[in-house]
Amino acid sequence: MARRRSTSGDPAVLALVRRLGEALEEFGLAEIEVAWGGVRVRLQRPGAAPSVPSVLLPTAPAERAGAPVVADVVPPSMVTVDAPMVGTFYCAPSPTAEPYVREGDVVKEGQIVCIIEAMKLMNEIESKVAGRVAKICVENGHAVEYGQALFLIDPTA
Image (cartoon, rainbow, N blue to C red):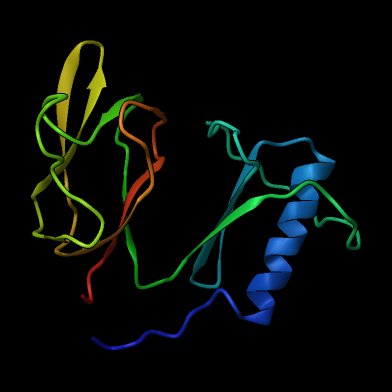
């Protein structure tokens, strides 16, 4: 398996994460996400539910101590499968069935990876690309918002 360069130790990415953390605290946000230079960074306070609105924030002031945050740095080679609607995420077709996919599974383009229940309708969500499921971003039975990342898929695997 070929190794990719990690962007999480990049000084520019770390500086971006720090500035976003400052903005998170300064504006009292539960979550903030930004795409910059081929890297997507999402910060979320522990226990905070994802929010719908996207906010463009001005540059935050110099560093200061703040509440701990969770940071997800998405490498540019990863492809996200996003929620196409608001609803409830289910990883399997029924409560007793095996999940459609698990982290580490290889998927094909068009393969069903989960279900989103919206208005009592079960909507099958398909993978946009072939590759390996690197991360499942949502817990079974949790609410999802439109555009929220459900899966990270590594198409190079």
